[in-house]
Structures are given as structure tokens and as C-alpha cells.
Length: 158
Image 1: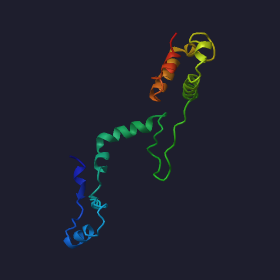
Image 2: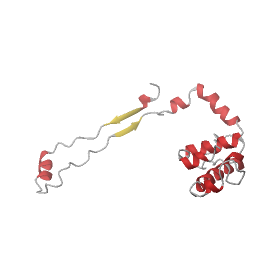
Image 3: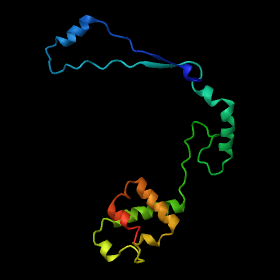
Image 4: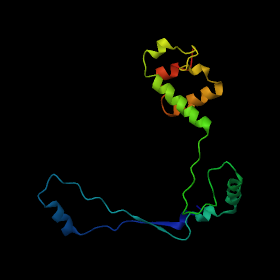
């Protein structure tokens, strides 16, 4: 495999000192019978590691495509010393999240379903949302594992 030959795993040295092993078992402490954890091995990198794969000409065109994208939050030319910029959520993304959390919080009120059933046109009515917005809110609630709650799910259907 390309790049995999650039790494070598060196196993830990084995402790074969029998006197030391007997001394630890003859302490008289019978409750502590677990052996000490074995020492960890070591990975040694030879050459460039997986950089051989990253520098392959096949990937050069993909890097140039990422640099051409204007909406990408990945900046290939950023120095390693600068932190990666965080994507800024749009106003729509913030509204979807706020609506999803509002529906979740309003589902905790037991009397709300009797006072404002779905389809009544109140501010608690999730049916007032456009179909695309409703799908986005339901998707977010599903990702947050909140859509499976019956009181939350019920808010989206008459």
C-alpha cells in the first residue's frame, strides 16, 4: 500500500527479570493481584509518511478546486500558525435552530396542546411554516433526537 510502508511499529521491550516478578507477588498484598500494564509500543515514521499520497498528482486538481470555491470555509493557503476560520451561520440557519428549540420547549407545557392545537394559527403552530422550513426544523429536531418525542412530533401534523 502506498504510504503504509513509511511507518514501523516497534513492540515494547519484554521484562524478563524473574526476581523482580517474584518480589512483586511476594509482597503479602493479596488484594492487588493485577499485573502492571504492559509498556506501549512505538510508531516510527520513515520518510514522508502519508504525505506521499497527499502529494500525488491526482489530488492536485482537487486542491485547486477547493481554492476556487468562494463559499468554502476551508482555506488551503492559510498558514499552519493561523487557526482555521469558523463558518458563519446564515440568518435562516439561526432561525431554524431557534424555531426547533421553541417547539421543543413548548412541548413541555402539557396544557398547551389543548389551548393551541396544531393548525389554529397561533405562534405555537408549526403548520404555519412553509414546507421547506418545516422540513428543515424537523430535520434538526431529528438530529437532536427530539423528533421522536410524541409531543414534539404531534406539533407538525393536524
